[in-house]
Image 1 (spheres, rainbow, N blue to C red):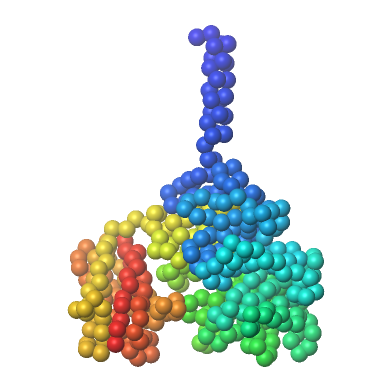
Image 2: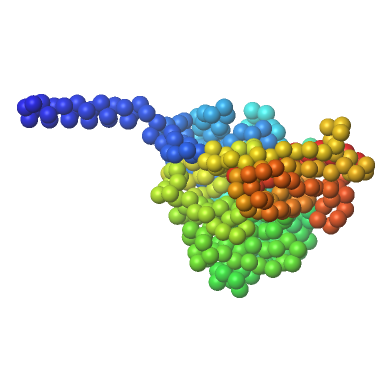
Length: 436
């Protein structure tokens, strides 16, 4: 073959390859279990994803630097008209028909397809202030964390929306900074936690108390706060991660030396099996209570390392969303876990378990290999009721008994309980109906 024919063949191949690349989604499936979404393969208007959340209908909402998008039936919508060309810094779902969006200088509400806007002095929101965090309590009271106006709270009473004075640097409600990056609520006691660039503060409706994280992590600069199912409070700072125990109040810290990818922790969440996930500027990590497992662009399908937010779907596939500065990544844990064990549930004679007549839940499993089987049982509010464990021989039928009692030894009330079973080759979810 002549040299010019070879050159022509190479050129033709490059043209064809370039054409194929333009029509093929470049990030559609990085590797098993991972799916990435960018402006190149979806309707996303910008790759810088600042916030992500799931609403009560299972719809995923993403806030970008050019508006908000929703994800339904495997596709992203175009940017919503009311949010176009604006950064969406925070998103929160209130109920099945209401989603809130934090912008610069305004708060947007989408309810049953209708949009409403809140801004100006009437709503205590300055024109240049960013709404960085939104929290909705079980009483439907909303809390806004802003970059310039401190904390803003409001609720609806008798069809009228009542906006409270800003909770900031004005006594007696003193927070040392108006720059609020994160808000989380401990529902059982209605305590709010505010994360600022000058510390973490708790507020019970009467008094504000500062938690001096600088005693533990040598910094008070808080980026993220999360309350887990056991009501332990997690704080992500620029100097590491801290966990405040719900019962003892003890503080446990995690830094790079302990296994997290980077000391700056931008986002924190928890999956159905109780694992804690964190997002940092250099990747994500999962904590199973003993070890940290790191995820980045080199060892996983992440589209980018700089993670801004994390959302975990309320599905049985344990679907985790990572909002990065390079696009969105979705990880379906169920697809990447090689499961070889089996789980079955027995107990009761009427389709439910009645502890009043001696019924117990018998969780039968076959582990893929010898090891520890753990069962976490939660009530309908997502709170841990009982933790069980058993050493398994593997490769044969074995079982764990739950006698329908909680950690205090009391018989639980009627309801549907969810058991998460994990062990060698096993990741399973079982629902246990209890009727007394």
